[in-house]
Image 1 (cartoon, rainbow, N blue to C red):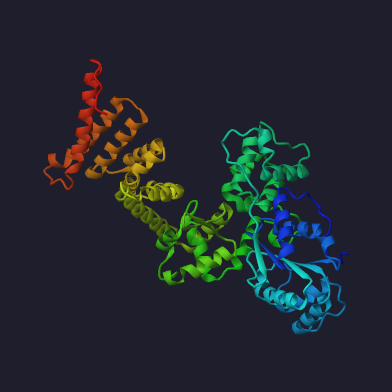
Image 2 (cartoon, one colour):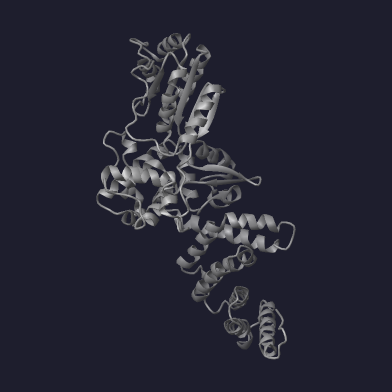
Length: 521
């Protein structure tokens, strides 16, 4: 049987959650408390209600859903649960109500769903612990941005819907097998019945759901914009996603109506240190490791001694995700969460300082990688740089955007030269070198000489003609020898030798090629 507080009928299909529904259902058969965690808008409530509906026959004394989103007073929690159980007078205060609920459930086999616990997490934890001890036949399914943290709990993180990597030439049929695309298409037809994913819009839809991280609420809000925009037009406006995604259901709780309100709710649940770190880690692109966050984000306002606790708080509240990669911790955040953090960082006035620290960190990291490249740690360094490839790009862009930083950027593009080669990123390495050389003062002679010679070398590895490489090497020699001609002492005498040696080899190869003799590689 189900009480008035049980799960109601679904108004829209639940998309892409079959595997999760099965796994959570199995957990409920072995664990007495299962908590679904995840970032706001990921669909914890929908998943919990589906699991509860499917599990109804296993609980002869009912499935009871307690919606806590609108409850602000923790002292009223037990009364709210009593109301969902159908108790006429569950008690005048919290203690009496808890006793009444525990007595009611003591001999029953029931499932209690506590939905949206995050703002009442301590009270929910105490109540769940009390009820589970009092009622052996009780199971509790909770949802929230963080776990309740009691002994009986089994945590199930709810991930965003799967997306496809855009630009890979996926067919329309393949895209329609992607859960995020299916959700967008289904919600789109609610506002534009004639809408369908086809050859004309498939790429835009794939890019759109990818940019939205597969986050169900964001996808639904984007689909609602199809009343007035095409998928491509929505995609073009995603740089200001918080202004764009504002048309949620009128019957939804306020924080589910717009993307900004959803993020504001998550932000308000954080303490001051967590809010500061959320904003600061938004300078990273892609993931980051513990060394990175310590080097970039810690200072007197956020001491290194407190970092682990603050970081743990953001992971616990589903702002950050944690992964173990070959024994090293990596952290990441959804782009929606990152964009919100960047807005908060801009309000603090800290972006210039944080972006410079970010650049300095990766300048040091790539220099260390280059020093140890030809040694036992080469594979480790390659993996680290590969994981931080997006951060290298962000640091290089900073050097191009900020006046006076081009020389540092040139050093940053030079340091991972063997990484560019090993990663098969010769074209990208050369593109950074070319852009930074164009922005660098010719007076930085030794640095420019190395950069020009490296550019020539990468070009040769690409298979580009000797003529272009020789031109770059001649320019490198010119740059390296300029201080001598001006009567200055050359600080670094090594650069001229390398371009001259390589140029000599190239010219020798060209002279001997006609005679059928292989030149020096």
